[in-house]
Image (cartoon, rainbow, N blue to C red):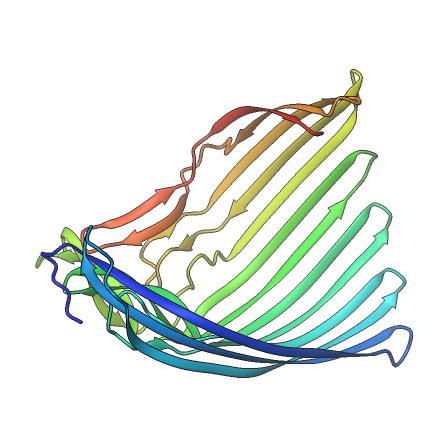
Length: 342
């Protein structure tokens, strides 16, 4: 359906989904230390798409049949767990995942759809509690995506619409580490480190938006959409590494309980578009909270601070034909709380 950029209109689209699934797992314990797990899942979805184009502010038109498609898949899961010590396990898992295909409802009358997304996931790791004050886990993973579904922007007669399209393939690999420490009574420290490489390995027809420029390469305002090979580009919202540390301390104080807590979060830079043009630079935020609860009262009084580093961080982006729109997280914020538990 052709849309006019000079006419106000409303897009109506509806997808009805009927989904069925059956799954089961088998557990085997050849020894008291070794466990084997095997499972299968069958998924079946039928999607029916109806749509219409109406006048903005007018009565909703009747939706007409636009497309119908069924998607099904069988996905296995295999896991091996081995207890190397009383409180230490190592494991390996292999699994497949399936995300149903879908219609794009941004252009009424268009019956094209995106193919199902599939993942082949491998993970090896260790979970341990070697002492009474330390609990940690470490995992390495590799995810192989096929027909990964990604958000993109398309312009229909100059009108910006959000769409979903298939990238041919993507490879994610990385390491996740977590630890919980309780070095003294009342104090709990939690830490987490994630190292990630998430890039498109094949994406020959990626939809991208590029600023409009003059003959000298100077931006003149607005964007246009085109197609490019995005192999090697970073996936959206996928920083190379993140770190979080939080501490919580609780003690008796003045006839009640005093709770002190703080959080630190650091993220490496990441992108909001498949072409890696809209960037959130690396940033660090801090938060803190002090709370006091009088004994046997049900009350809690607290003061807190968020984003104490006052970093400007982008929460989301929306690219239009006119500009790159972004929304920001709240700046440095202070507040007080009162709560009562019955």
